Structure formats: C-alpha cells, structure tokens
Length: 349
Image (tube, rainbow, N blue to C red; front, side, top):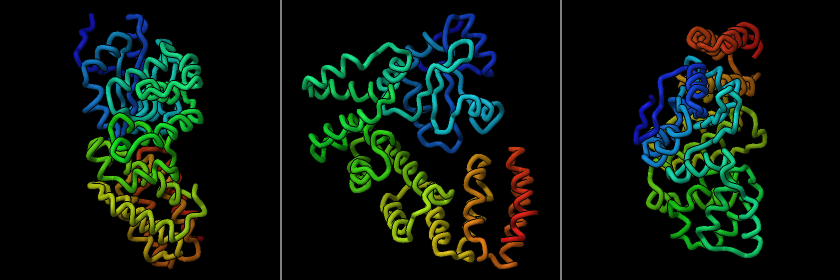
C-alpha cells in the first residue's frame, strides 16, 4: 500500500520501475522534468507541488517521479519524449506512451490541476467556444476559457481572447496575479508582443501584484531567450541598437543572480561589432562553467561569427578552452565536437 501524502508524493524510482508501479496500481505516471538552473522549476517544486490540493489530485491518479534532465537517465528521457523547455511535466500511460506534456510553471495549484484535467480530457472547450461566441464576458468564465484554450494548445484563439480581456483591464488590474498566466505564457504573449512590452514597462507593479520570484523568473527567461537567439544565430538580423536596448531593459529590471545575462549582452555586442578582443574574455567567463546542454547550442556560433578577427594569441586561448571543456563535459558527442573544433576549426579562424 502506497501512503498518500498531503503534498505530491514523488517516489525515488527510475522510470521503468515507475511504469511498473503504475501498471500494478492502475495509475498513470507523472514525470517532473527539471534542471538545476531552471528558476520556474524551483518555484513549482517549492510553491505549487507541495500544496495539498495538488498532492491529493496527483497522488490518487499518478505515480509521480522527478528527474534532472542533465543527470543519470534524464538526458535519455528528454530525448525520447522531446523535452526542450523547463519545467515540463510528462503525463504517461503505464505502458510508457505519452498522453501529453505540460510545459511551464503555473501561478497556483488550482491552475496546475486544471491543466492536468484538460490534458486527460476531463474538460472540453466546445461548450466554452459557444458561450464566448454568444457574448459571455463574465471574468470568471473568460479566465476558465483562456486556461482551457491554453492547455489544449489553441494559442491563436487564446491570443485573441486574452487581448480582448487585457484591453478591458485598468493598469492596476493588469498586474493582478489572476491574470499573470497571460503574460507568463510565451505562446499567448510572445516576445515582441504588446503584453511583453507592457510587462517590461511596469515591472514593479507586477512584482507587487504577483510576487518577486515568479516575475523575476519570467523576466530572466524572456531575456535569456532573446539574447540566446542572437548568440546561437537564430536571430541573424539583430542590430547593435537592439542589443543595447535589451541591455538597458535588463539593467532596469535588476535581476539578482543573473549576471550571466549581462555577459550575454557584452558577447552579443562584440559579435555585431566584430570585436574579438572584447568577445574572448566574456566567452571564457560564460563558457567555462556552462552546462553541457547550453554549451552544445551556444559555444560554437559566437566563435565562428568572428572568423577572421581572431589573432594567433586569441586562437591559442580558444584552443586551450575548447580542449579543457572537452575533458570536462560528460556528453560524448559534445566532447568529441569540442575536440574536433579545437583541432580542425580553430586554426582556420
């Protein structure tokens, strides 16, 4: 007999054993996929998953386990189920097949339980669609409708509904925790949207209304995505003016413990200005302690972007750093890639 706790009961089982237990108990499996550096993961672990209403709901239906996606069997699980963002909660049948992944944190336990219910098909949006189309704009209904659209990944419709809702709110109301999920979900409020611009202009209001931790976690994720898209070459059209503006916004937000984001700004500016001398020290500062996962997609592009700008002295330091990282990292593919990069690519930079 498995004892049910008031909080979510995470069992110390590998995934195979968790699936076996789920099969014998007639349950499903919930996998909390996290990383040590993920701020929203820590908030879910400390604020949401310990709540009684969450534990009561999950423990009755799921064998719950959690794994660091960068350790032990975590990378294998991430690859198998396509986990690319954190936190992700995998809802699995007892045979290991995926029901649905739930991506991102929630502001309340009620919202998390609601998302799980939607994923399991316990709630449908069909009736809600009809009620909204007929003119129902009661706040409680619209919020429930939005969360249903969000959980069922109807993001185009969710953006339309949320935009109408936000326009009906005054400045004070927009910063209520009730509406935070609208700003928090990048699918509803993408980078460059009016909602994100509003958040950046009213950070203190949101910290008062929602709380410092969740707002700072969202802001950090926002800046991280914008800057990493530049560093890894996804945003090929970024200008120096754009990066300088990001730097000003970052400074205004004052995010403790995220000095790495300021280093991202320095490196992005160096890439745009083709300044290898400015890039090298910040590359060393960023990359030497960086996780395997981030190194794999951030390390190579900034260095290659500055091809033709590296001096022989720079190349020596890049060679040394690449070889030292190759010895340190655990990912075999990355290990070989770094060594090959040092031997074959750096001499031709």
